Amino acid sequence: MRSLVLLPIIALASSHAVAAPDEAFHDFAALTGEWTCRGIFPASGKTIDSTLRFEFDLNGKALVKHHDDTSPPAMYHALEAWGYDAKNTRYNAAILDNFGGARVFSSDGWKDGRLIWTSAPEVKPAQRFIYAHEANQGLRIDWEVLKGDSYVVGDTLHCTPQHSSHQASSSTR
Image (cartoon, rainbow, N blue to C red; front, top):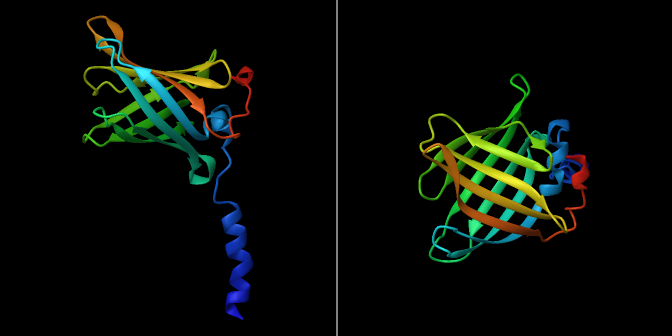
């Protein structure tokens, strides 16, 4: 009898396993799902292939990103957690990678079709990630490093969505 009572509760909980975005993450909904990326390291001309996966967590109050390089020898893997700080009206990101790196970034959110993550002051050299919408629901990600007084592109990825969850219009950004 006890299992009959728990069955509807388990079914209800399972139906909410994929969290809907919190209002602060409304403009991030188009990122959810899997992406296939191809890119380049401009300094060397070497190419890079990666997969990305975005999903909401913490009842839609966080966005989690998995980044996995798929082209040797650059086998970078990272887990990112993005959250919204209502008190300071900004987004925060923590990035952990397979090389032992732990970096913190902040952003004002999507502005004019771009999302710019800027590293915290303790990250040396300073870095930023720039996400920009491309044609056909594509996404460009530039990783930049501060050299002297200006940022230099370390790598660029052009990403294509792999699921129909990428239906949101970029005009909402």
